Image 1: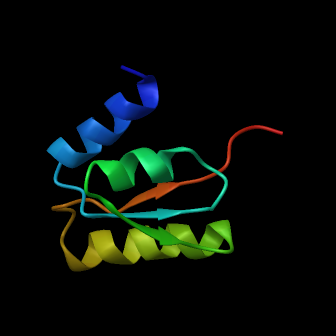
Image 2: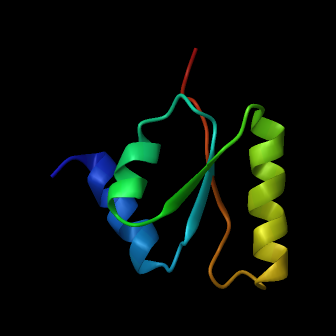
Image 3: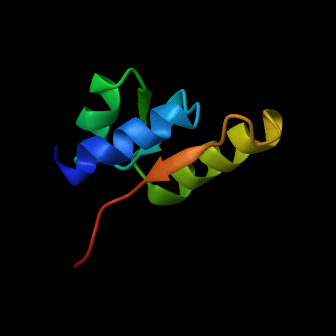
Length: 72
């Protein structure tokens, strides 16, 4: 099992239904395979706003999640 698969399984167990993401992360594919629906964002701040708004509407259950690109 890869770390990325473990992350997606944990997100699924936490009840995450949607993953807002910047399109350069491998979390998208692993999450989609786990049944989490990706929402692709062209700007990181938009993805954070989506995750924040979702968490506010659902009172944090399930939580809003954002995945972004890594390192320089």
